[in-house]
Image (cartoon, rainbow, N blue to C red; front, side, top):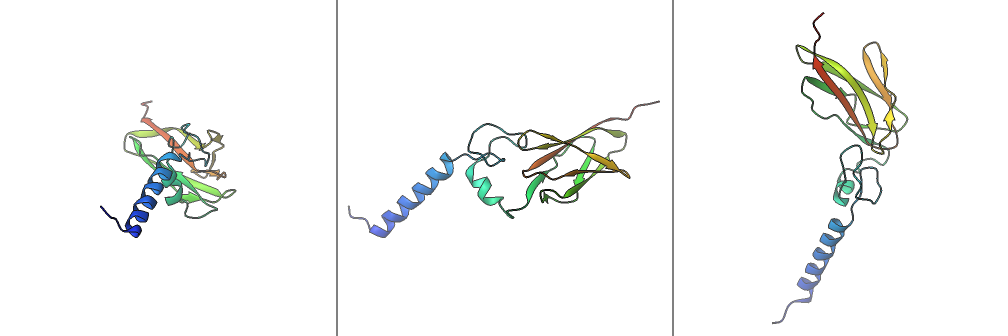
Length: 138
């Protein structure tokens, strides 16, 4: 059976791309290990390519939590700039804690001024972890 050279080269190129995407794990911190990171676990190489966006901005993750909502002033942040965090508990709930964790596992300092939380964006993605609890009855 005779095949066309262009068709064969196309199949080789597609197979090579699949092998590269599958075999090159990249963590959210940008390293080349399969070790899960603090933000979202191990990431595949394709995630890094799709979320690159701006070379100077990193993702800010605000996971959904029972008991309230978390909003940040931006979905990505520029290193060294302040990011504001707004917390809105549901009826009958109050905020119990807030942590901002960088992809490398470091906990960032969170500031509170005039009812608004903020932190300084590092050179890596972050996750804003807020927990809510039922309001205490006095």
